[in-house]
Amino acid sequence: MNGVPEGGERRGCLGADRVAVVALAGNVENVLLGVVLMAGSGTTVLLARARGAGDPDGVRAAVRGGWALWALLTPAVAVGGFLGREPLAELVLGGHGNPAVPLATGYFAVALPGIAVFFATNVVDGILKGTGDTRTPMRLALLANGLILLLDPLLILGCGLGVRGAALATVLGRTAALACGLVVLRRRALPRTAGVTPRHLLADLRRTLRTGLPLSADFVVRMSGALALVAVVARIGVAEVAAYGIATKAMYGATMAFYAIRQAAAIHTARLLGGGRDERRAVGREALRLSAAVGFAAFLVLSATAPWIMAGFGASGEVAAAGTLYLRCLGPYLLLLACFIALGGVFDGSGAGPLLARITGCGVALQLALAHGLSGLGLPGVCLAMALAAAAQCTALARLHRRTGPQRVAEGAAVRAARTASGARTDDADRHR
Image (cartoon, rainbow, N blue to C red; front, side):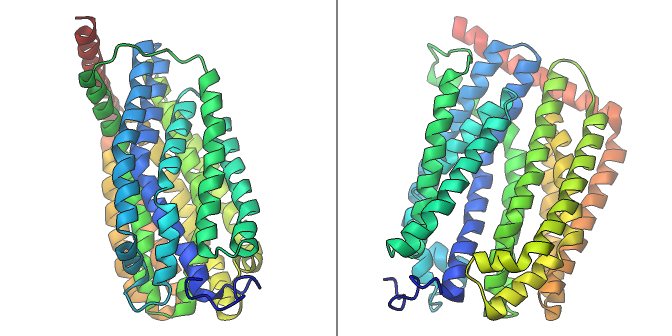
């Protein structure tokens, strides 16, 4: 099936190409996650701000805007991705002659239509987080990942579906989590919406898009940089590409924790500002302390368990050795990245997210240039490039904070809040008319 030797996958000997396909396909999904963060994160911030201000109309508008943006984004990504699955596979894996391209095409044929479920789950998470419930999204994520871990061996090996089985397991696990999330959401006492015109729905969508776009852009650029780094790693060797794909997928567990702290900081900041309280400095200090501890702990865990992580993905020999070395060189990068991402939540919650997206874009460009120059050192050189770029981003963020100053940031946030409130009042007036 898909060019796989008879019984090869059943014995668990997936080979570097199949391991790389599943691992690198995760990078593509992370880029797509950044797209839907416009809906999820925009809903979270607007909902938290409305609840802080005690504005039920704002709560309704935030929920409507999130689902409207989901309905706009999902068909374009799911249908467009499915139709372009083969060119996408060639782009990710570097050409038509790569034997892994047909495998990646088969994976995307299942995974990309299933992105509709992934996107809907993100909106549900965004609504729950905006109401102050961050535990339920975490439980839903654990449920989805637990089911994926159970279904993977059944579908990949037991049913002989190969990489398509991995994609199907992911979609089924997420579908179960989404169903549970919708049940939880139905039980929440959120203000009900009735009699909304297309014009008002479009206004809600625009507000959500405007609020969520900075974080989405930041995430998409960062994940695209990780994907583009594959081309640099490919100059080192095939084993290193597979090792990089696995190690990056493992590292995303830590990265998601950093973004969870960032979102918590954004929710807290937005809610406090909505209630007329400016405590960005205190929130920032707590976010930095927590993220530094999580970043250091993540490095210790990844370093200690690196051989088992590689074995868990079916890697052995050169691939396992290269991946273990890479994971053990990530310490400085993880610590710097944790601080930058988490502190960004304060800026997101106060409306200064676009500045962070610019810093991220410059940092990713610097990272790729440094990685190209240091690739002669192998994967440790790539790690060094990532750490240097992260240090530059942290330095830029610190300078931005000093230059802006608390008073000027507060004034800017007040102006943005006034504009948002004015738009909401106009919409409400139109609705009453």
